[in-house]
Length: 612
Image (tube, rainbow, N blue to C red):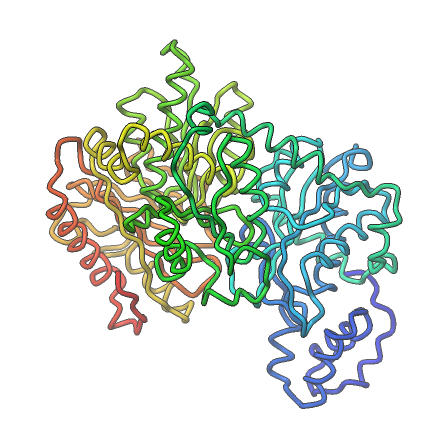
């Protein structure tokens, strides 16, 4: 840590020396009057435990960056912690890139805001820019809110060293975040995230100019990339537009909700780029509103309960398809009249089929298939694997999180391979190779084109999904969780699974079915490999074990990185021809229940259940 000067620790005596020092640091360093007043009020009212919670721990780099509630304290998102994080980023990037001074960084933001702390995404983005500009680093700072995918797209197009997007995506309204992208456009991953954190901890005292928000307006090193990036992005959508002549005549009507976020204008433009009439916006949710007044949770993945306004509007307008982007427009939910809300895995089956269908149409030479890849995270459906086995392209799994998909895309591109589709089950999709991250804007218009093509042939999306399952085998999945707020209990549960009957032996069966393979990415064990070593990177900081059963069910137990949950994902991967859906669903339910009861023991461990 840098020299903090002679802080008068006795002026804020709580009886805890470490806490007193943190309080003095905060009050000395924070120039935001609202957040400084929050700490002073807590001190005045004697809320020592709350002060400890806010000041004695720091945010860690999670999903490619930082995410927490907005408010005062080193554990929360605010002006000071964003400045500290960017100072650490600057030092890391200056060490990593000899040409950092010419490459610069891209900075974007969404529309989140919190009046009580004077925190909003635009201000945090401008402070991020100020830290870089005061060190003579060029900054491409967007002049207005943009979808998250625009930042990695801009990083690649402009040759920047890194990118920062200030967003908390679909989190509750209290939260904000700081998402970091590497020079290849992929979200930052290990070991770079750990390195940045180390530099942040060495750069806690703000530099005087770091607070100069006006640098974003006055510095000659600041450039607004909005017009160039928006234009180029809409042009590049041509790479995933295959049937423009049909689109211009399409009678289909679409409804779009942007969930009070950034997506409305950009989805409208994407539809025009494809030759469509723009979708009908949900008026109550069209404009940005950081309070998300019409939804209890701004997450379209929650399905029908949060899509109510969209579905009602679609019925009134006789629209067949509902599209909903989350607040930062990197994820997409889809529903079809009368009303089938697709899961992330079902939508991936449709989009994977569509991208492959069009790739084959435009590449008559079958030999080219050898360099084609599709990717999915390991807790997502194995439907793409079934495609690959029949069609002859390559399929690879990554660890959960799009940062791992982005990293794999970069590796494959270096060897001349092409990823035409990638996804994670939590409604994150990447069609084509425009952006090495999930992208709700391009996915929305690709779904619109697929639907128009199918309806032109008197087929619905749901009917096509059934066709896919008939050809490649039914893939029926379920995802749920139990809540466990005791880390020691979580550790005990997973230790028991790893020593189920004897030391270092995993369970041999579940729900009456033999377990064929076990993969444990926490320890690096994989019984399906000749040397029992896991192909995926080992992640000791979280728990994740996958079981492959004799009957074709694949089940994964894992801890959440952001919530006190043990998640479980199960999927019946049936071979083609086995199409008695009700018996497959019944079998999956039986095995899922057995897995939870036998391995997690919810009653014994006082776990809070969520119905599957």
